[in-house]
Image (cartoon, rainbow over all chains, first blue to last red; front, side):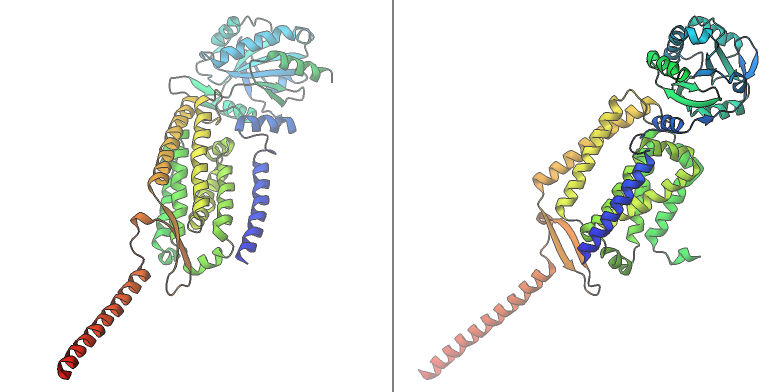
Length: 205
Length: 250
């Protein structure tokens, strides 16, 4: 009798446990927070806050001002010696690969600094110069308040942690914002061809 | 306060959980992946084990009707442990209050407690299997953390992950050496005995080389010794009688 009861309880618990684990991993697809946020935005695009940003020329704008265009967004800090350099290189190549739609005003690039105190407009301009991004379609910008930064990173799902050496560790990726101003997709860095193909598909579905 | 009626181990467990939940302790133990996985989570499991010491005999009998050889409890603990081994669960437990509460309650109650209750019911083979699986997990995770160029937790840095990997490999190695030592120089046997008054079977795996003569065997031996002594006395008396008789008859 004990054996039978144990068998029944075990079978029920295995089913329930399997279901719980499937739910906790989006059907065994997302085991990390980074994958989870990508799965989530593909399923349901995320509305973004219209916080005030300041670009490399000192001009102020919000993400809402850029609606109607497809927007590629990355998060950087200009002192970053490693991963942000890769992001900058990717954006430079995307700018070339997407030159057509950019010239038509259908696609824009935006690099947002999460270290606004160290990244005034002059540093943002220097960052763009470093990667040859001199077209008006690639902006570098910083949020003006800590609250704006917090709301932006929360909406995009970007986590920034101090690396103990004065710099930061962050989950680096390239984000695609649709013309309705919603975060619609997230890509790995290092593969700009894949991103430009995805953007071109989005432009002409 | 009802806590006055709780057994001492349960009160200690609640105290341990409350200490682990306080902001400064949380802050220190969740600042690194290593401290969270090798200090905080094991201490929460210990809290669950403490609770298992305070379970009354009656409740235990009821649980054991559903827990043949500890299988059911093992499944509960394994599923809960699998959930808390997900990097995204660990991340969420440090940034979302609800997930934090879930961690502080579920690790003791769904991992530590059922595992401790089940371990006492398990036979030698199942125990060996679990120990081998723990060693294998240490090596698997240690290796993954050591070589992965990607951070698995967004809240922790790569150097932290690598350090944890190294410690896990060392832990796995240490456990393996200990297990091999036991297998080579220890003998395993499962002893069942009934404790008087409770009518419940306790199973213990013991190393027979260190085992004293079981009490019932010792008492039988004493009894037979007494009988044989009595026999010897009787034989002696006969001898004496014979000698006396012989002497009288002569």
